[in-house]
Image (cartoon, rainbow, N blue to C red; front, side, top):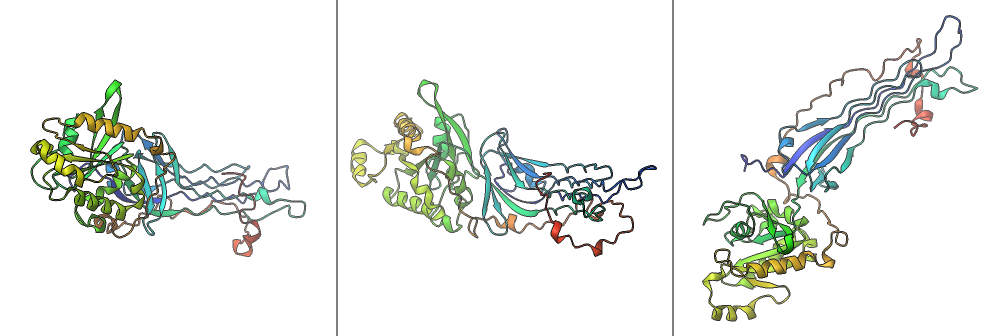
Length: 398
């Protein structure tokens, strides 16, 4: 797994820029004895922004860039000159990326569309210069606002693949073989469990030049919702799938029981998955004759469509695509009507190697610089209580 280019879970440290300090300055000219205050405002700090990119399919770039720091705003100067705003830091992420607070596990935001931008951390506002505080009774204000501090947060980014159909089944149920039979995808296929080590996507052609996307995830075993096996790590990907295709091999001892075990694991992982359309496929049906199929049908669940298929002979694949397309296009299956509820991250949904990752506290380039370069005319800042002026004009300059 460590050598794979498919990274769907990463922990990063983000910091927005701090606002520049307002300037404390008075106009000086040879023939202007009392020029008055003219200290400019500080620039705002840079934002940390997430942007969806349809050409990305993995969070791999962020695995090697763990610290995301936006630029700090510059201080204001004389002549009501505004400080330069800090540079924003834009993080390109694949569509379907969800962001959680690494400390609490709380869901923060998600990026689902190409070009969509989400402001993850807001940069600090710049401080106001002393010219904002002049009045008829206070003509020489000897104070200016400092900039707002930066915001630092450790976040976890999860990638949840966008697909129409998600394959759910035990190891060696024939999921990868079905994906290779229905699409041009070529996942690794072998006769041992957990051959599929990472999700695979394939585009399935349908009638009248229509198509839909199918996602294959590693096999699920009983207890996956509690952290057993590989399936738990990739169960998040089927949260975005419109339809769930359950696959149980025809040689299973009890097909209905295996289906109920898979359904229970999904329920434990996220109860909202129970609201999705479901289809049951009995794979490897080329081992059954019509008499055995007749005996098996009464024992199958009667609350969802069931299709006998064989990826080797092609049996039932057309009927399966018809059933999947009907479920995908069902009016009650629209995203607008069934919004996705992202469960908070808990101990079972985290990756130990990521949570134990230790960040080095890397300071920003101007961490040791003063908040502002001001001309204070000998005024002592400790004599000023800025309580009455704290962000009084906060909406003047974002």
